[in-house]
Image 1 (tube, rainbow over the protein chains, first blue to last red):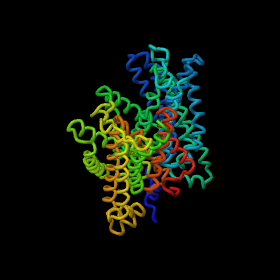
Image 2 (tube, chains in turn blue, purple):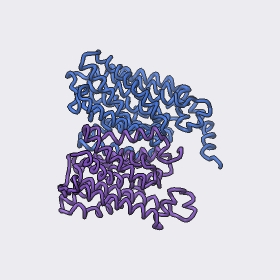
Image 3 (cartoon, rainbow over the protein chains, first blue to last red):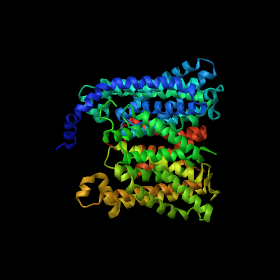
Image 4 (cartoon, helix red, strand yellow):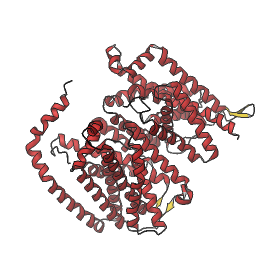
Length: 334
Length: 284
């Protein structure tokens, strides 16, 4: 069979080379500037903005963390997980319990929550990553639901369905800083992975796992690494979120909506890209906030509708759209 | 309640699971699309019966044909307009697409009808059978579900259109080369699967209270049933459904409803881990 698609991509590097290669060289500097601007914005924003906007920006940052971390596994390796809510919920509970029982300062509790979640992810990943395609997706969904059931049944530890109350917090600024740093670390790790050989190895899993193995790539090890890392970030984010909201119960933190947000954010921005989750996180959170103001149920329609529309008319998300319009050059590292 | 009573109750419930899973089984087998919106097709069926009963006092059993027909048409429309576009793309596209459809349907239902629990008071009595008491509504639901599952099986096995569906399922290219309009087969298959889900929904609406999110708890059960019975095997799926139904009610009898809910997940996860390529039978 003549591989027309393969021939087309083989020609592509030459056609785009001049401008794109220059861009690729420039990119690290662009990112450094972007990083500096972001850090300054995170430092200054809570001092200038009203509390409502600080809380809203915190949710944007949370969406970016969820998207970027989901992207690390699913965007790069193609193992689509519907279980991100499970990691978010586990992190929320670890963080909340550490804070309530005065076992750690809140920021340490958040880090421990991330490490704890990642530790839980190791055996889960070792088992589930043997499954492919829909089996992996459905099993991850099932495990997240199972985690919710455990959380609501384990009364003595989690308070069951009654949930847990955290100390009341008037000022969200400290949470905003924490979530900001977490988002920066998540995106930076994604960038470092994508621009290293590791990123190529993960992409090889998405494109053709068996071929990757044939070339001597230990795909099991790499995808497990990506899986555990992608569980760490929602774990930390869950703990910060619990502190911000002040009350958690199994339905609020293990709800499927967190998986939906992670998937929708990444797909809308562009899965398998660095900037995608950022663009998706900003736009979708603002749209969701608007939808929420219209009607508490509307946001689910918005998210579901967007996933469908993006798949049908905009596969590749905003990033692909920008590339085909040639507003940004095609590079692997974006 | 004695244990025997619990087992019978679980068997009757399993019949409805079998019907629900049969539609999904058909769609996955013929289209290679894992329909994550299948639970929402069931939910819509439940609401059709509910509204016909509440607004027009239609007997829930008589609303079943209406529920099936409406969802047959909606299913065909959804397939033609949306799912058909991703059928030939990698499995993950259809997985994400139907995930989006599921979220969308739940959102629309929440907007239109609210999130409160609904129920239909219907046939609440029980029949004595020896030492056991059989819930009338569960018995009727079981009989309808098993009859319909059997009818679908016979339709696929012996009717001409059933044969074209199976041909498309086994070898889409060869089927096309033989002059079968595979797009039409896919559209009708999705319609039939939706209708089966809708009837299951109508039956569930008289057995349990429900809200727009009910499909989310039924979908994993259908996957567990299919994984247990094997894809494409109607007899295997029927047995799998009875096993899941009994296991759930027995676990619920000894513990809390929470753990009963987890039975399907545990069956699913354990089966997939023991037989990773179980569903399709081959390493796909």
